[in-house]
Image (cartoon, rainbow, N blue to C red):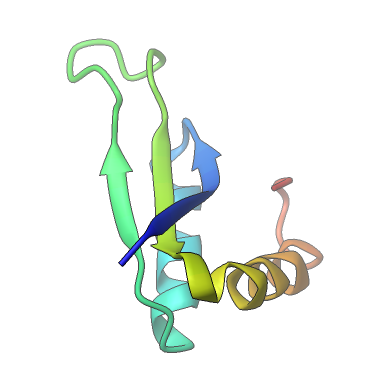
Length: 72
């Protein structure tokens, strides 16, 4: 299965919200935390979904981002 990055942030709460949104809608999601453990301002948290679910996942994120205070 091929995975594609669909979201990246430096704020763990944002990544968790999107991860939950995708999981609640039966989209398999993998969270990859590339932040430095000593300096969290360095590095990103990335979310990946299967290639065949990218369009659906982006639609979900776009719909949700209208109600939240962050951009995709």
